Image (cartoon, rainbow, N blue to C red; front, side, top):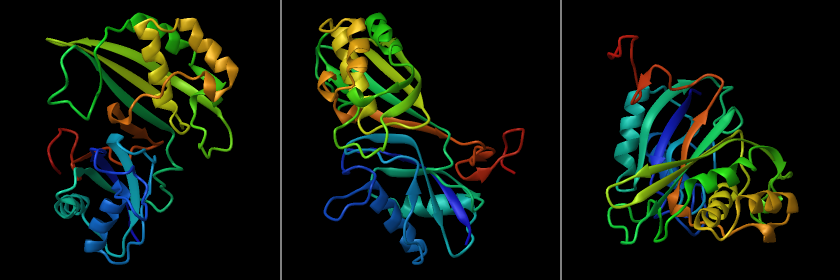
Length: 270
């Protein structure tokens, strides 16, 4: 059976997360139902990450085995059609070998968290960013973030219902970017690691926001980490500013593909 990798973008607002559930809508269910309209033999798909309720994605990756061979571009187009009106899009597709696994083959995951500071409420970006009314100090947040880099026991920064067997993780990047807008300031938190714990990124950002607001000192982040106690964590920020932005593999399954179509080295369709 041919196997296909799918790069998926979605707005997580109407879903109870990625993973299929019995009584609540999920992104996985929406994609699987679209696939089953093309191939009734499809029983399920596997994804690189299980995003929580309300979390978005611009670079989720899943794989599926199908009975028939599809040209990747046509598969993506057919799925886009059957996914309507859900806020889910297949932005790329590629045929991969049977050893490829969206979750277990991944070597890195990158998340983006968007926070906007301004007095006025959000209009166009409502539901896709975390809005705070007060000013934040990006340098202080970065100083606090630097204590989290490297390999640590992240018990403080994971949910109490996290099912991972170990709290040990290696954080490769936690970078705070400040972007001046016309009437606001946007802060983007770029977070990169091989794997994450449940609520880890939202715990990081919620804690660092307290540093930026002046309620915590940067050194308090180090103390919280060392405590290895969930009670030492700052507030967990809301999910709607979080995006699964990219998943990396030893070999990019979508390299040389544009929207599901192969391209030559000149950038034109082959």
